[in-house]
Image (tube, rainbow, N blue to C red; front, side):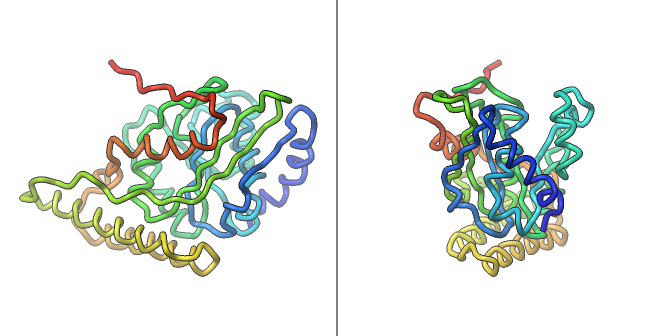
Length: 272
């Protein structure tokens, strides 16, 4: 059991019931009781992670959640609340100035192998009310790298009373990759293709496995299998961490958008 959750859940739950926050949760029946899975959510306020943690009570009674968090939060540049939450929750630090995807994906895979939960805000920053920002490639690359299910979550302030609303969707897996290498002369390309096929096959199998304790343990074992195979093949881990396709971000973003009110709009990727 996640001891931080046990200690801090009660005071946070009391605060969530106050008029200022008035937390309401829909779709809690979609939360598995065990990991591994990847939470993908939009980002509105620094309290989002707390609201999500309270909403994921069925799972967090049994395993720990690891949010991706930019290093600026630890340094206090995002406010005192963010810095406090950094200390309360174990996090996977994200350096936005680094171009290395594996810096976040490697520790994420390690957590998923242990049957834990990884939480990602793919927008990378907070957005205005009724706006869903474009998703960055980090979560899509992670979703391609691990045969783990994703849990879409929407967090926003309700118009009628200003309270926090959390809507939880159903688990989903990424569809098989569409793009395949046209030329396979290079050894590295052949290995990229091979491991991509292996992950897709495991995802299709994982989708049929019951999401109970035994089933989720099997999925964690599959993630461990991929990590083990990767270590034995001469494929660049950096390339492995960049397997997402252009459509993947939108596929994931649409899953979150479905959980938001109808008047929310997507902010498009800025074109240079």
